Length: 599
Image (cartoon, rainbow, N blue to C red; front, side, top):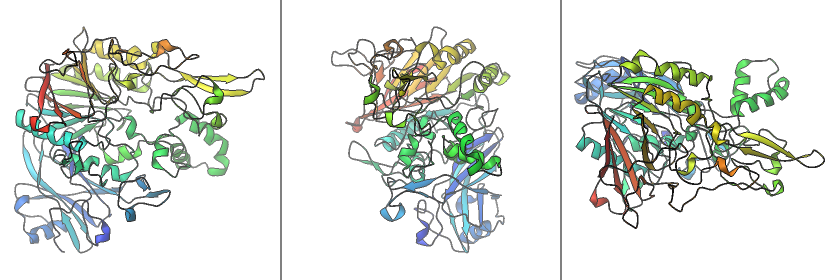
């Protein structure tokens, strides 16, 4: 065995002929009484272990070599890890990697292995740990981090809220400022709630691990980034996930579109197809593509020709608490009962051409006239990935969770979802409803166009989900998606917070602002698209401490500025939710606490 460099080993490539970690270890809590430690490499390896105990930081090379072979050391527990290869991650010519590490054309699979082990730490305790991976006669070991036991009821905790990273230019700066500010003002971060859009293209491996711009998801959340922000300075992010478990939700950028027939991961992302459409197309070709009727072959064909969240599900281990598996779940985090929903849809542009002959591109409102006879090439509007209507499986699970003893007994309750019911942002339209398809025909009954409407009255979040949340008296609803900060409070006292501004805002459209969301022309019904305001009906809340102001000195109930980053945290000791911003045009001013309220 040979001990390799402990610092700087993360991210080294196998071509160096030495094993290296692709990421530091990160924490998940799939079970109430244990914590999962997981990490990634680009080699399968011969053995992988978690080393935990007071003595791990002082282990000698001889002791590390013994641990690499599975042996024990004084004051150190050695826990063997399981390994699985990620099945869909790949790179293409648009990957931000050195030229010799990305294909010149097409999509090339990339070998990435996930190693994970469950460790048990008593509630209230925290222990140092490291991970070690073995390849042949060599091994690589991480730095020393700490893992805590489950947060017990009554134990004050700091929960960081962050969203919509998507490798944006200011994401690393956002996380670096957030970790520093939250830790200084509230204490160490005990957990992270993240309502989606962790990356941009989920099947592109480099966006998770080693995008050369320095803002890959794990690199930033583990303090190993290096993105130059809009102020011209480089930021590394912060060591967060090595010490605090992440509770994610699925956003539209965790859903990869149809992979079959594509040579670009970007094009694949934007060609998501509903499952029912892919299944109907499969029935037409089943005899040729699957003559033996193998269910696994059918399942793979349908996934390859519709959409998938497989990469997300293979990377993360959120709690499992019902029929949603990893897609939606509930968990108790100290004094908080967290309910996480799968509430998102494919995003498409807002172009709307009244003349079917002019439709050269497919959007949320229309199909291209070139694809009227090819269901797999069509977009099918902004369809919802998982139904939330009354009677659906997810809706019934949510109703059951909101009536459960775990929910009723919790001091604080939080519902987290990517697309929320209230927002001043652009992406709150069209209404969150299944697209209503209209086939347009000429005088000879020939199909000449396909368009989609989104009846505002059928918004599933407002019509079906919101009444459950309000009736149950949820304390906080946390969402992302619109890349801005705004919040609302209902008459029943439910707080709705969107804090997804990492520096790529789509803008805010409050009533009377003069700014209007794009509204499609006739024959679409203009009343279905709210040009201004919050379609959910609640008025936005002006920040309680230091609101930004417009040119006339009036306080603004939002932050939608590409050069401003925003972050939030919940302190369960007092039930306080705090928001800060940093103006990237003047970072010397530091973080400004601009809003605070109690649950």
